[in-house]
Image (cartoon, rainbow, N blue to C red; front, top):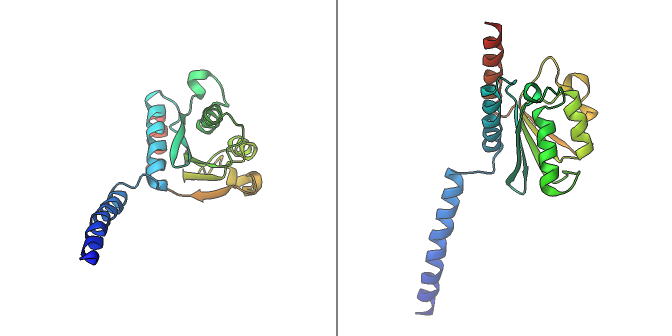
Length: 173
């Protein structure tokens, strides 16, 4: 009888644990793809404002703490890249200039300026979608990043690249 009671007590928790695991498998919010899709939302916002469609989010402890997109045209500021806006928002949120426990998700490979700023924030990880074959920092020197920063590339590369191609195609016509 005692064993039967234990099994009854274990059974509901087993069902709960399986249901919870299934939920996370179906709706995994903590993947690179999920956060890159959030950055893509920001890029689409930039696109609607006739800005170069680059979006960024910064994640800390599995939570988005900053969202940003290019604002160079709106602010008439060549430094108003999505990454720079996101660094500022994240630092304001955390109250700290160092983002060493955070991850930057950005739809386009950062330029040298943004990679240099990432160095100073000591961000722990940078994840980008599309490579920038003209102005990306990896063309110059991958060592621009802080030595502890991990780099992950090519997440949703096609989706990120297509939005940029569409933007520049529309600009030329």
